[in-house]
Picture 1 (cartoon, one colour):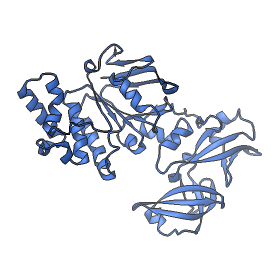
Picture 2 (cartoon, helix red, strand yellow; picture 1 turned 45 degrees about the horizontal axis):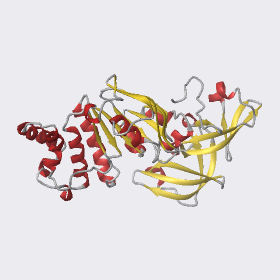
Picture 3 (cartoon, rainbow, N blue to C red; picture 1 turned 30 degrees about the vertical axis):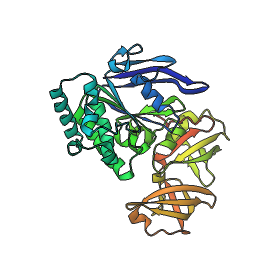
Picture 4 (cartoon, rainbow, N blue to C red; picture 1 turned 120 degrees about the vertical axis):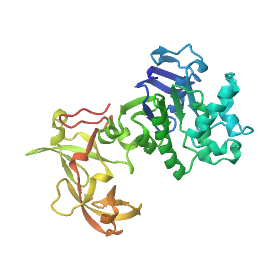
Length: 374
C-alpha cells in the first residue's frame, strides 16, 4: 500500500505539532521517520492510522483519501512504544485477540496464531503471560498482534526504546528480516535514533519541529545533508560544525576557520555571489580527519589530544586544534593505539567530505555540479 501525506497540519492548543507535512511512501517500502523528541513523529503516525485527526491536509492510502474512514477500515496496524499487551492473557490469546474481535472461526485463529508465532519465533511462549516474557519477546508479541490481521501498512512508533542495547541490535536485524518476508507490506518506522533509521530505512524522512526538512536515502543524508540540522543528526560521532569566513585572495577565494584555511573553489558557482567577510558554517565529519603520514593531500592543521575513547575496532579522539577549537576524529584502532593524551599530532582533512552551510539559515551550499539535499 502506498501512502501519500499532503500538507498535514495539527495543533494542540498553541503547540503546532505538524506544520504542513508532505511525503510519499512507496508500496512495500521500509520508510523511516527520524527526528528528536517532540518533532511530531507520533502525531504523524497516529493521523495516518486514523487515531488522530488533522486540522488540515490529507492522507491517501493506496490512492484513496481516508479522511472519512474509521481506524478499522484502513487496513493498517500500529505498534506503540509501550507494547500495550494484555497482562492477564497468554501470548496465544494476545495474538488471537484482534481475530476474535473480527469473529474469525476458531480453526482459522489457531492456524494464523501459529503462523505468526513461528515467523516471530514466539512458538515456545504461546502458553506464557507477558510478565514472564523477556523485553524482546514482549516486543515481538506486540508486533505479532499487529501483523495477524495482515495489514497492508504497519506503523511502528519507537518500538525499540524500552529494550537494552544488545536487544535493540538484534531486533533491528529482525525487522529487516520481517520486512523481507512480508513482501508487500509497507512499513513506516518512527525513531529518534539515527542508527535505527540509517540501518533499516530504505529512505528516511527527517522531521524537525513538525516539518519534513529532507527525504533521502541513508547514504545521501550522510553525504549531502540539506542543512546543518540534518548534518548534525546523521552520523556518529556527530559532525564537527565550525564557524568560517569567506576571504578573497590573489588566487581566488578561501574559507578561513579558526585554525586553517579551505579552498572555496569547489563551491565557486554559489559563493561567487557572496561578498568577502560572509560568515559560513563548515562541517567536518570525524571520519574525514586523519593524521598526516606523508605530504597532506588536503587542508592541514596541528592539534593536541586531550581525550581518547577506544571502542574496539575504532577509537574516538577529542582534539584541540591550535589549542582552542575542540574537534572529534575517528581512527581505526591500528592507527590510534600509538596516540596518547597530550600528544601533538599533525592532521589533514579529506576535502571531498567537507560540508558547507549558510550561517544564517543553515541551508547546505552545494558543490559545483551537484544539488543540495532535499
